[in-house]
Length: 232
Image 1: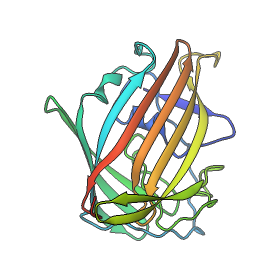
Image 2 (image 1 turned 180 degrees about the horizontal axis):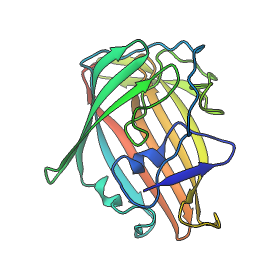
Image 3 (image 1 turned 45 degrees about the horizontal axis):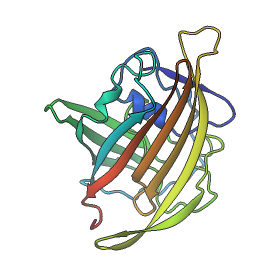
């Protein structure tokens, strides 16, 4: 899939990238071309080498999803687990290894490096939702690269080992079908992301996209099911 976005709200690689991580077709996620490096942003890395985070994935839609939207939308419901492991940290650059395992035994392994000071990814279609630690409400995420996306607030989440602070934000954008030169084949996305404030790693993602051609709505949900970073 190859989505391109336009509009005043530029999000931090949300549902669009979730679809593009493995679904390959005519629509693909494009965040920014030639992103500018930031030398003024100070970001705190909250994860440690060896930290692992495992997610359950699911997808639903209001009707059959055509190939022009996703050539393999059912992969989300065919997922056994999706695990992210922190393999290296160099300053504000965090290297991850991701294992996407399906119930039929198929595995996809994708390395990713995220610079938490800028938001720049080594793989634009790879895993993205790791953010600087200890962010507060109303702070803009990656202010020198992404405009208009800020922390909406902080909740408290209860786990077996106690409570932890969880930041959250929402973002919207327009996407359009790259092979429609008129630009009339579009979709609107709404995404809500929760992430652990101490580590910066996502704990829950809900990505909803409404398309106009064909008229269909899709929802993808990522839920953190286990981690060794704190008792769950």
